[in-house]
Length: 209
Image (cartoon, rainbow, N blue to C red; front, side, top):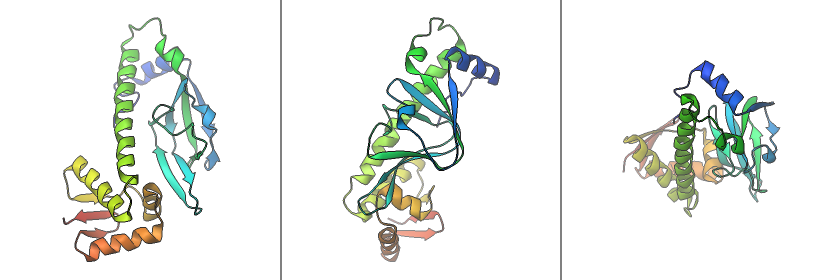
């Protein structure tokens, strides 16, 4: 995925952030981040760290709704940050650059190449984030664990053009991502393997269907 400051030099990044009156907030690992930090009038850029938005399910299990890594953007228009059902948690020490949207969109001097490049980068990133959000909805709206897994595999195969899928999560995190019980997930993966749908070794899944 494209990065917010892609094709912008370090010197011009500093100039850009000063132009935008941006400021950085630091959170320690395992801190609940106030969702008001990024409201409808601002965006956040993860300078460093890792954030999860999670929902506590009725059975006590956490469901990972969204994840944000270095260079990811948090914005109310593409994230679940405003919902009272969810918590935003720093899973590592995290630095977030906060930019006011009014300042961003009302710059008088728009002749700076680095400013225009940044706006272009933001547009491309937000478009990609919406695609990812829609993919997640495709997966979690499936009724059975098998259907969720097969949809997840199908989406990843279309992206890579390969029958080999490398899971970005451990199985606990994958079960959270899919919104299912871990033990039930492992049973379904075993069933798919026994029935000849997949082969698996560690985080590598090979699709046989």
